[in-house]
Amino acid sequence: MKSAAPCRTMVCVPLLAAALILAGCWTAPVANVQPKGEARLIQGGIAVASFKAPAVVESLEPSTRTIVMRRLGTTAASTYKLGPGFANISSLKAGDIVEATLVQELTVYVLRDGEAPGAGGVPEKITADARVLSVDQSYRLLTLQYPNGQNETFKVPLGVRLKEMAAGDSVVIRPIEAVSLRQQR
Image 1 (cartoon, one colour):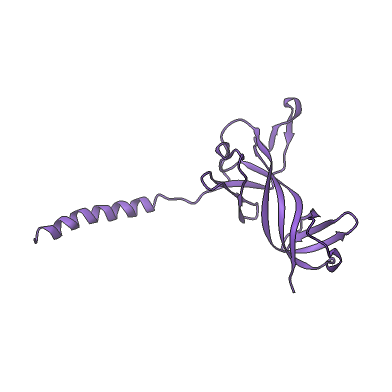
Image 2 (cartoon, rainbow, N blue to C red):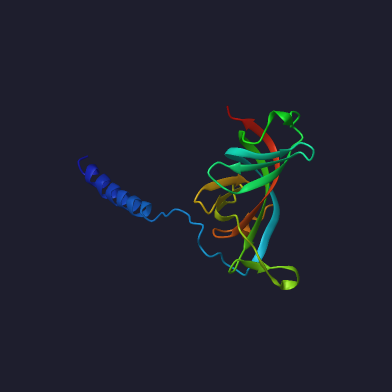
């Protein structure tokens, strides 16, 4: 019975050492890698829902049902249509701080020197809003990294060609609709 303890030690120590070595091999994903393949459009028109941290209402146009918002701490503003659920638009005004649930459209590219083939094969300059950080095909998750270093994960619909996407791909984000707004008091 005394020989069983040294045997356990002989098995446990190498397993522990292997676990420590493998744990040291993991690295966090990065979005600044050069994607593989030729410059091309991977897929456009990917509608995703996004919850945005507090934003400032820059302007509101009830007649066209549009709102212009800017995330706190940024200078860029985006224009959204107000969804059909907004009955009382008059309760909002410029300067209000809101939390928004938005629908946005993603277009994913492989770019070379900021260009992708356009109409007739002529290179077209594309300005990316974010880059792909990681792709999880099993859960249909696409994680993007913005130029300011913030990450956002989107659940994408069925039919999105996640197998063709990889870290470093460029993403253009187009605002579509504000689904809900909640005023902060």
